[in-house]
Length: 215
Image (cartoon, rainbow, N blue to C red):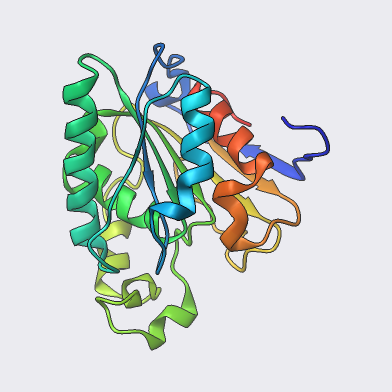
């Protein structure tokens, strides 16, 4: 990782085929999903770093703050990446609510068939209580008691032969939330939530995760 970047804690969990996921092929495309209220500008630093490392980067232009519609936009972007890189498994990196939209794509839209690695940054995998004050289509789906979170909680939360990594900051309110079945959970100290996609330690950890290893 970058000089001065320390990982405070890393826990490796989970078993099954995904635990032995192979390193990505050269030029593996990576789809990037920004968080609530954001834009593709939020993942521009991450996209540039991925491209410098040889990964074609595909920031998703999300239609709004509703996760199902966002998951459909992810599906469209994944299909574009697959058409431009035939035979490649796609990686997905989602920040904050973007990690939930990406999970919906994997769980409910058949995305796990096309994805080799899933990485979330600062995602509230069990929900975020302050979101309960928002309408469902404006971020309220992140409420722990929402129908959307209940749907995500049904069945297998980590489907397919996908290597799942969750990254969190020690400053995240949801830092202790784990994605059941994920191979890796890593906490990085002292990074404000909004800065995670452009922080060197988070970007380094995401790159490590794309190899199928735990950061």
